[in-house]
View 1 (cartoon, helix red, strand yellow):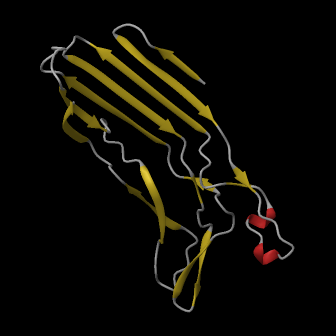
View 2 (cartoon, helix red, strand yellow):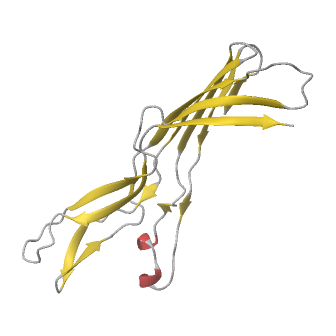
View 3 (cartoon, one colour):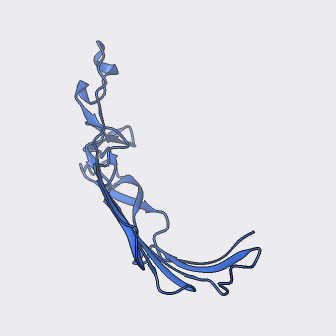
Length: 180
């Protein structure tokens, strides 16, 4: 679903997508089945996605843009416990893709400055100043697990969850663009 505004100083669009992706892996041999032969979400199953783009042309020289994006987190398989073989920790994964990583969202903004607006030039140029991830959201790229303790003699079913964030801070940039 999408809505657009194409005319005027303020333009942009918003779109929303709902989609599901599940898979079922069955086999006559129990050890080849995944998730006990039941349906489970695929790696790409992110049911909700929203994008909002807003552009504002203040004058011939200045324009502004904002881009907001949101999607639900992708599936991940969380361990439901742990056990030890000798003195080695082994996570106990029971059901495939039984959870999701945190939802993803960020806001990017930019300003474009065109120093000369003459049309008779053989080439055009402008400066763009932008900020990626304006509110420094630490979106999870991946999630991994470590046991609460590594001592064989202390048994605990819980594990610590850690998330890896890529670009987990504000990124400013300056760009010089030209066309000929």
